[in-house]
Length: 459
Image 1 (cartoon, rainbow, N blue to C red):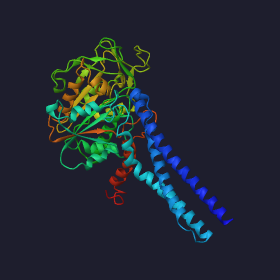
Image 2 (image 1 turned 90 degrees about the vertical axis):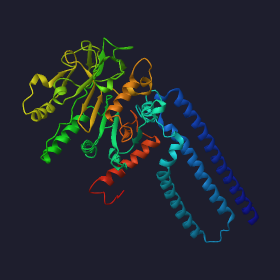
Image 3 (image 1 turned 120 degrees about the horizontal axis):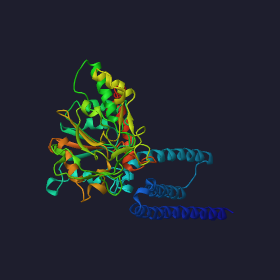
Image 4 (image 1 turned 90 degrees about the horizontal axis):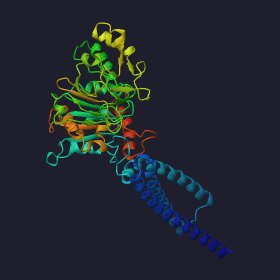
């Protein structure tokens, strides 16, 4: 009977070993197959590629790893004489299970942000991301800015922000910063990030803001209000931060376009401005427009480029035609605040800015504030990988001119920073390696820069 029991136990151990081996091999092969499938799918239809698929192989490899660890533990236990009492052995086994579960949780949280770049190579499919090499990405713009001058680039040092804009305050050295907001779709935190912009413009820094129906529609207004309150609280006076608004609508130009009026070709440029040197035509894609009217004169904007003066308008209800009662920008309570700033009431009719002739929709505005400069584009798509390289238009030259003007044409004392923290997938959470890293780091940076909690997180 004893021999029979030993034989039965040995057979059970062999069966368990076969099961462990099967799962290890299965998970490895399945992970390799899914990895190849996701790569081919990303090439064929990148805009429809679900980013979470890139993490399935990682889960398979982790599963195979833990199966392997479990297999080794099983072999060790099977070859060691168990002379302890049954109850003690059960307690040890239970304690070991809890320890292994805790170890698994810690391992995932600690190593997934480090191992995930092996899966997606740090790339993503987010619109306008400099890590997106597809048609809708911004990798070509980054390449143009970063590439050495001898190779046709601008030769700037380039960095990206994945967590919080306040991370730029930790950059060593005394270089000035050019912050590029390229079509962000995540709102800026009024507690942490709007005050950041106030300090940002106290130094010799510049801003390139490219709107694309996202979270920058009222960003300049929020910065303006915060700056005004900051000056009032300190009894200071200074130049007003420039304000404009991006109405919720699509720019149509029935005079200059290709292939439809929603893809306007901008030809009306201020030829005296440095940003328009050797620039004749720039194509946009489903753009908005910066509000004109008295705001342009009030804040001293330089109008760099506009749509055609007679046949362009911003279509707010997407019916393809001008509706005088709909296609307007109503300032509302913002007009009241502007009246206080101007020191005189704004006429009621001026609080409703038409988005059609005679108020020509402007698409490019610039403001020189001395040590700082601001350039505003009503479209970000003109700098995506598809349009920036189009040989029929001057989008590349325009981008170079803008960067050089904003940095005073100095690639030695300026650093260019892309805001990736506010670019996320349109319909899901960002599960890319950079997105996960940024999600974790933004809370660490917020806590370490907050005066109340900084002493706990002295980073």
